[in-house]
Amino acid sequence: MRVLVIDDESLIRMDICDALDAAGYEIVGEGQNGVEALQLTKTLQPDIIVMDVKMPELDGIEAARQIRHLQIAPVVLLTAYSQQDLVKKAAESGVYGYLIKPLNEVQLIPTLEMAYNRFQESQLHRETIDKLEDTLEEQKWVRKATAILMENLKINEDVAYRRIRSFAMDKRLPVIEVCRRIIKEQEKKIVR
Image 1 (tube, helix red, strand yellow):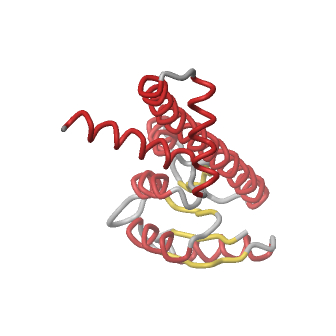
Image 2 (cartoon, rainbow, N blue to C red; image 1 turned 45 degrees about the horizontal axis):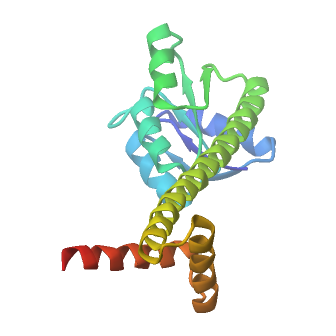
């Protein structure tokens, strides 16, 4: 797993890197603040990010929130503080793990593995949702184009759909493209 380590304290950063290296992880980069975390995440595309909460310029919670929107990698936050409000803010930012300093190496690796696996599952769910939304959008176009053919040609739904599909295969076009063309032509007729 390729890991990006962000902490403003160089000794802690070094300890984290040593622990991860010893466990067989690849350290792809290191940073000292949230601004660097964002930049390095975009350029290095790590598999996971281990980041401190309290840092100068941009804190870890806000950096994690922005990284979540990039959908590149999960963030595991490290902090010396365990206050409930901080934990709540971290959860709301979309982090995948939260560890309290001093770092317990026994907890670090399982936390990273769990975070990485949860992130991968989340990505699969997101892809499934995107595909379903695309399918629903395509169905709307097909229904509308089919209705236009049914009305204009006085044919039933099955025949209208078979004509769309046949035309799409003959012209080597996606069905949705044929539907869009039918709808566009109908709209031109209405405007005239």
